[in-house]
Amino acid sequence: MLDDIRLRLTLGYVGILALILVAFGVVVVIIFRDVTVSQHDDLLSKRAQVLADAVSRGGTVEDAMGGGTVPEGSTDYAVVHLASGGTVLSRDSAARDLGLPSPGSSEAARNAARNVEPDVVTVYGPGGAARVASAPVLRSGAVA
Image (tube, rainbow, N blue to C red; front, side, top):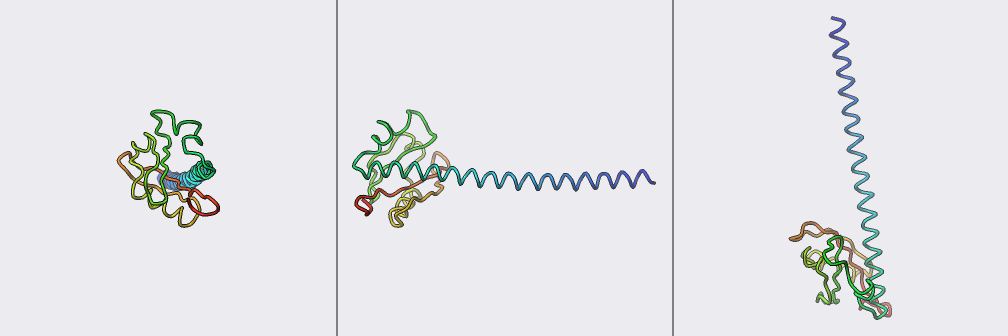
């Protein structure tokens, strides 16, 4: 009878410890995901702002990227240059593969122009989910 109680207590403690470890693991994964997404958004926003600043000084997106937007065949990121009315001025092959600009990315671009600050959203297209950063091009303090 004493062995039966020991077994139950041991299994109970092991079960509680397992639940605590699983809960801790879930919390760590959620925190890591949030931090990673935040860092990724910051990098995207900074890159979009660098490109927007280069275009605002009279250059082109291709000039700002060193002659080309992305290496051929790369799907890590894509660049789409939109006019304030939403007309596509330039777009690379990765953007086409991701289905950009999409209605969600165009709305992000309009929000960025309206608020005069970068906007980051997730859009879903034929290429899957994509994180989109939009930065307005400013000339003489106004959205170009």
